[in-house]
Length: 216
Image (cartoon, rainbow, N blue to C red; front, side, top):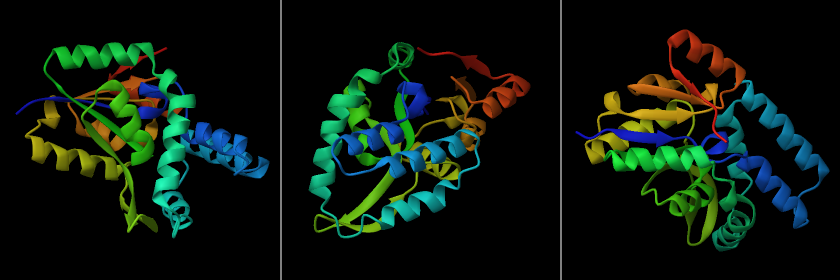
């Protein structure tokens, strides 16, 4: 069995919050307003405090996509990634990924973001395996449902499924994350690393004796 190195995306591999970045992109396109931006800021603050019900929010937002054309969203996400995200990879994240790859570890991007953001970031970094939230589409149109959720305990389930498929040893694996919301997977792996941690994760990491790192 091989070890893996799993990386959260926002504020870990990337220097930014992709949810906020996407809302600003939509604002520039005239597809969202100031109220939408304010709502996104509010959700971001709740998330950082680990007070946001991500399952309820993701379910509600995805339901709003029902009937929309997947091709249009995928094209917009590709443009957004190229303009606003590709250059936001943290230098220390690249170094950590390269180090684990040289050691023979399986590299995994593990994020609550959807496949449209997560897979673009993974391609840019040469990461083959992606655990993320996935929006369902049938016949090129969204059904309004999620086929996978990539946060909290759901992220653990996805990691365990991948471990079975690839014969990975999670007890010998490392997970890098900035968020207290990722505590379930941080506890599940053998080595937890708090990267740019929020206040609650920093306190927990200090008590647990986990590594704490500041990535640029």
